[in-house]
Amino acid sequence: MGLSDIDYVFESSSEVAHKVGGIYTVLRTKAPYIHHILKDKYVMIGRLSSESLQEIKQVDPPEEFKKVFNTLSREGIKTAYGRWVYADNVNVILLDSKEYMEQRVSYYHSGMKKNDTMLNYVKYLLWQEYHIDSLHSSWDFNDNVGWAWAVGIFLEEFYNLTKKNVIAHFHEWISGAGVLYCKYKKLPIGTVFTTHATVLGRTISSAGRDVLTECSGKVKHINVSEAYRYGVEAKHMLEKATVQYTDIFTTVSETVAMEVDYILGRQPDVITINGMDFRSKTTEFNPIVARYVHDEIKEFIESYFAPYYEQDYSDPIFVFTSGRYEFDNKGYDIYIEALAEANKRLKVAGLKRRIFAFLFVPSTIKGPKLSIIKNYLTTDKIYELLEKNGVKEYQYSNIYEAFRHLDGKTKLFFHSLIKNYVKEGDTPPLCAYDLNYQRDKIIRELQKNGLTNKKDDVVKVIFYPTYLGPADGLLELPYYDIISGMDIGVFTSRYEPYGYTPVEAALKNSIAVTSDMSGFGRYVLKKDIANEGLRVVNMYNKPKHIAVNQLADIFEEAYIASRDTIDDYKKIAYDTIREHTDWAKLIHFYVEAYDMAAKSMLVATQ
Image (tube, rainbow, N blue to C red; front, side, top):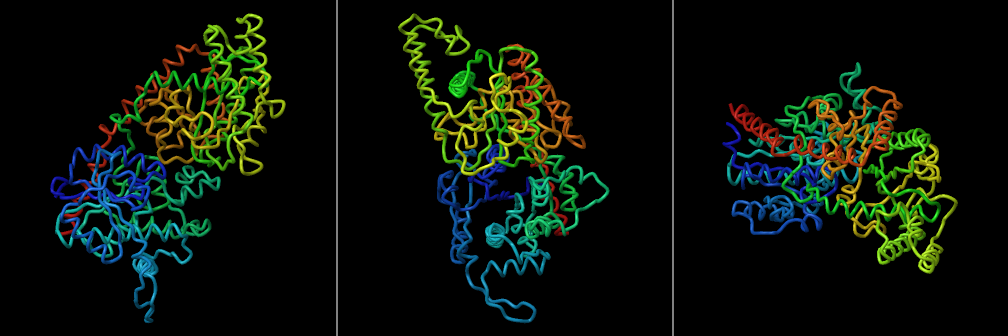
């Protein structure tokens, strides 16, 4: 039996039609390619919620699905069916198991009859069958177990009704209970499980431990006591049991392959490298939009710094990092220290050019600083009036220089506008927003490393602690538009199972910097495609100063390079990513996994 003999492939994840993290991107961009191969034999299963309903167009389900949905409804499992409009209109089933899991059920435990919720009965079965200790499990463990168990119930009811050949593909520990349900019920269904990152690996990395170094150490497998130490034993045990019992196990990079062997005790059967959908508008690079955004960022930058001192804005270098506020995991310390090192080196050069470095790292905020809003509006008015007075952008490096092109009366008027600028201190603020808390780590590290936006600093920094978008109160542009106006994107992660951010940066025509601790970085090194536009910083088994100096070298190189050279490097990054991360060239890994699962079904019946 092979994939051609399979009637349906069901792929389940809580991020189907519901954006939570990077798995959503994987699923959405991959779906058109699997859909093209399998047609309507391919169906995705997600969680029924108000968010997921917004991304699907509900339609009448096929008769065989409708019969199963009626059965599930009688049991208390809610369903919806439709097409995921952002993913090639792939057929999607959405399930909600809350009501089902709250039902009362009677069962025997240690010879005694118990009356409990269905959820606790499921957790009891997971203990009895797979030794998963969920006694102190968190609400999200309970919620996800209930949903994934309902996925298993759907698969059982569908098979019992149709007797069709089915492969079921599950993502992350969140859907792991679905695999275990299939095995508990001995369903003749081929199972595939993909982990994008392990629960325990991410946890211990957040605690400051170097997971990759541990993976290559003398201890072959981590002790389960570490999961108890960090309070993630239920999730870890569920994940480990799922890996042990699934037919085919995949993961997304060689980095995670090392991790899962160490933490979960099994090497993957297939490494399913993440790709991008280059037929999607989100991956397009529009030079007109990029030019517009670059000018908008430049105006924002000048409004940010002009109230405090005069400097050159004629040919700035725009640098950024972005991601969750995981200071150590994301390597923000390396980014900051490298900027500080570059600042020290470049002060000596005595050039007028400036590097403006952003940290797009969401946190909890009250809103944009009022002074910055006012100064932004003032600068916008100044730019508008300069244009009306025939002063072209190429004629000046800052608004103070532009005034020198004006006659007396007009110049006086512009000086009156300048008086509207508001200062909050002696130097421009490090953060563009007012935070909801004191002693922010990013701000403290910037100050500690001497990045305080003084006039003589070559490197200026802006912490932008909110999600970029039309309602962020300042730049008010989407993330993908903003990064198209940047020059260098830096993602020196210590723990990154794959890492889409450098891929996205390169696709939006930025020089992309990743690390050899990330899955994508290792992929770049394995394919030997690192170049002027796609850089990999060496961090694996290296002291931190090595990475800091390498990144500072990249900043210094860009600083002294001509604009034409920088643009050439950005084009190289774009072309490299287009060549090596296209789903059209990577989808065969998933096809291989499904074919292996189909063959495992034949073996199981012999």
